[in-house]
Image (cartoon, rainbow, N blue to C red; front, top):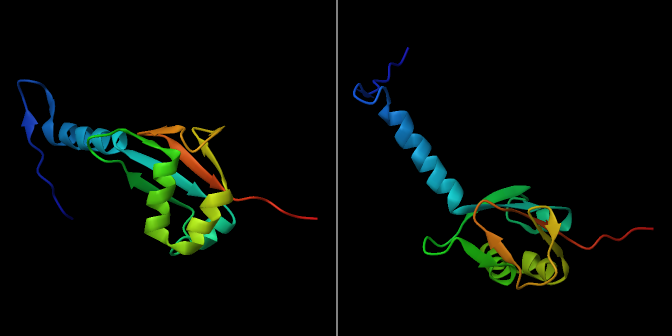
Length: 118
């Protein structure tokens, strides 16, 4: 059994280690977005991932859809770059109208390739 010592600040009456961890998680969440990949977009990512967290630049907590597409294309290569040219993008479960739409920290972004069928 492993024992972890926890420092308790008796003047404040709570666990300072856990508070620091919560603060770190909150900062992390505030500078991250979640990207979901569907269908061909998933297949085009390295490792065929369904989702990933992307860190925003620390000085910004927003990024345009166009900037996000460039970042994802750079990270995953030509196959995804080609899909990003024609895919639909939703931010916080709302379809984007243009690549100038804004993604804010904490948002969930979905990359949705064109669907075909018969």
